[in-house]
Length: 346
Image (tube, rainbow, N blue to C red; front, side, top):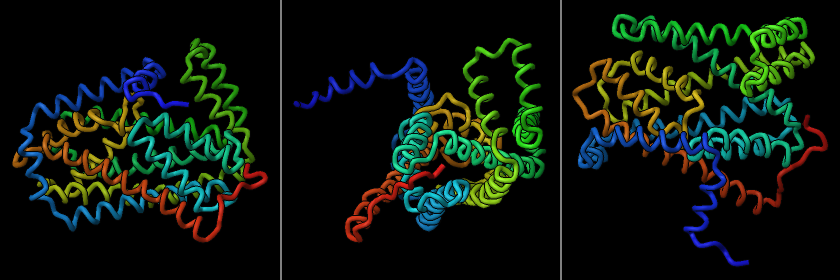
């Protein structure tokens, strides 16, 4: 079979995209175009000479650590039934697709690889994924609360936004925890409320109800152990995430204090949850960051150029993480080990 010419392959790929994905790509291109228009290419090139390589090296190490911490979280939440090395490989693929292509592609790869390679039921890996994200959201909310309190007098225009975000996080976590503690009684009432509001036909609502029902169906003691483990590891994970964000800002010599950086990092984390992004939040993150850094009066440097530089570094870091895949394959070839497939890892 002859391979398709590059142009035909591109047309085939474009035709396979859903209209929502096309809109996300167009939004990413448009927003990053706005940021690029605000800077001089010469400023971007000059960043190499101004970088703090020690801070950048620390940021890379912390970014790698985040991958291994997330792997530990999934490994523990899955009951250690799947070898850690295999979990790490799946996490690397998931993060690579999420940050370089689309979040939906990363989630799909996560569910598929655990099912095909490790015989983990999609319902089980899905619950682990949701608990992991809910734990991360809880920790992010706490850090946002503390950082917002410490910079409150400098973020006047965002007071209502921050209050709203913290309120949404609180309500969302209350619903999540109610499904765990009240179980079927809560789900019956929630289903009645959805039917009364005539929202049952909304795909996002149906998906959310299915996830909550799956959690409510779990054995209470087991789901509580999973939840506690997820919260503990998420606390460590998000702490390292904040440290990574601070190191990256220091690498580009942005004149901003610690808690302001943490406040911005928390908001960017929450913005990244909005399903309107492609290519790891390209454009959306940069536009949001321009507004936030401007609010803190960071005018001594060309923030548009720095944000483009941060984007390039972000992609390079992801490519470095992807080196784990060929290195792991080489290790397996040398040692003669093959990826394990448990009889039932559910």
